[in-house]
Length: 314
Length: 203
Image 1 (tube, each protein chain N blue to C red):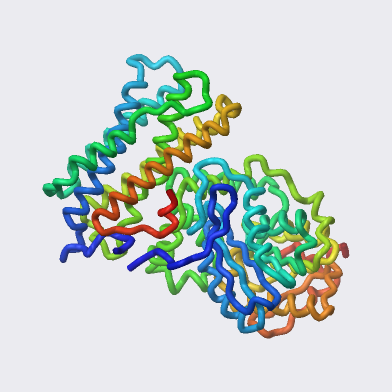
Image 2 (cartoon, each protein chain N blue to C red):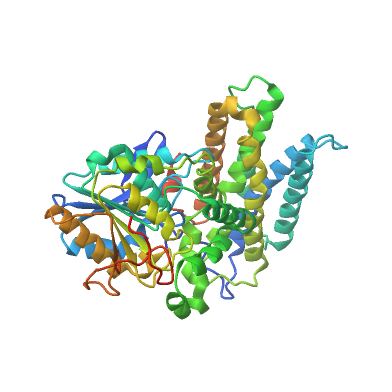
């Protein structure tokens, strides 16, 4: 039984090493996938397979402080993560599509603001550009949970918050094994450093308009960690964007619905490359299953509400 | 080599040789911290932050007491020179770049404590099939859990406003102590057939 991975490649950022992996044909359009806070690169395995089968190259990596990448002892900024991402994207030729979930989505947004000219498309998922009071307080509470109860307790808080009963029910009697790999690869201090990189956070909202690339924003229907209003900020501010609502999905829908999400990613990139993508700040509802049709959110209704309320068009 | 303890005994317990070597390392490291906290602890507390010194001292003592009682000790001839190397590494080494000698020593102590509390995860060595009733396994889980809490005092001190002008010196002291502790921990584990991932091989 071993935890190590043989001959894994690393990028260098100062004295730190960033573990990454490239798969798929070198001359293909690339998808770069950025982990959420407690995740690690192997969690994208299903996306790797699905996207390669659709003709993409796939780049995954562990952020600084995560998994097999180096874990700075104390001081780490979100700018360091953007630099690490930039090093990875510099390894790629051809069109690059960038997607990230939650914390990784925020890093992807930062990257698109700083280096948007390097991207062909952007897919922020379960994402946010600002910390309104609910998210700020939730983040603080999660950090306190980590400090008082360790990684395992943080996982206990996040799991029921971020995935559905449908996903949880079959694994309820083996949660320890579900949590074990995440517990093994994540260190308390490194997670805490990542969370504390928000202590001097400034909203990205004023800079979102500078994101010129086609952008598909994905938001779970039942995501209450980063609810619709946070994605609405992205939709309204990013010029060539659409918001796609994933039915019956929570914050961690990339774990729960990999086939559907990978299909949406591939279709978005195909549309952009074929010149068919027109964001129009539209609001769509994703299909229940991969391959189904996206349907426009019903005209005249408010997509920010959970009940069918007529809303103003924005 | 495996990344975990083992092969386990038939009852799922960690072999005594591995218990002895790992517990000795932990007793040495936490013992050094306990001694240094004891030296820094005044008989009568004069400021609020010194209450944390008191807590750190007694928590380190509790960790050592726990390991002494929970470990299945077995004779280990190599421990003599290993312990000498470990104890030498824990010697005070004032952080460079901080002119106030007492502050430089405090930063070094906090950096060493951060490296021990953050960088050493003994419970992560337990394979999934380890006997949950093994006191040694439970002790390691407790050491790792308590270390995560003890760590908070080091984080608050090292990130504190008083050290902002010396951030580079603090970073250097931290990275040096982390690298040193990581190397000693890795070498000790390899000596009992446990090899962590290659990321830990960073000097």
